[in-house]
Length: 222
Image (cartoon, rainbow, N blue to C red; front, top):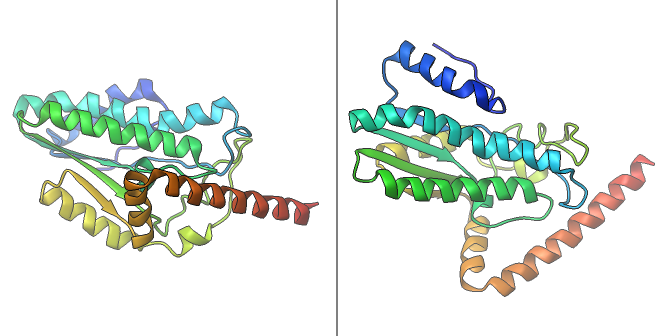
């Protein structure tokens, strides 16, 4: 049975959770996988864009988790999986709102994990790199319009089936925190932790490159 849900409508989530429990009797595994991205600088994006991403990417997952968690705690059994991003580990330019929402999701999952560890409920946070999906196509621009383009990095990303299998394995094995990415993303993560000044230099260069690419694209449009 498929039950549709719009994570942006926070007020509808408790009712949805109750209906899901009525239909399925109990929820053994909750995978929070809703998300939307952005393609714009922080200064060019209206606060409304930031709010939309935080609601869908963070508050929606938090609200659904809070609605279903009591039933898991009552049974002393359950597994909650958050699909975050490598950008929840380190931030990238032109992704400020997206990175912020994923950092928040990472923090929430880490905190929740410790709170329910002795209550029979497991928490897994998955941080994937680029996946060959429609994420960039459906991303928002600074004006809130659909980006409508397939990024090169997204197009050359991991196959969704491969990522899904790894996520299932992480849940079965009750892994706590998992990065599913190429060596470049893992390198960035460790450099951010070990030598942040070098990481910041790399990211600043990336920001300048993206700025030049955006300027060139705007010239073509004109």
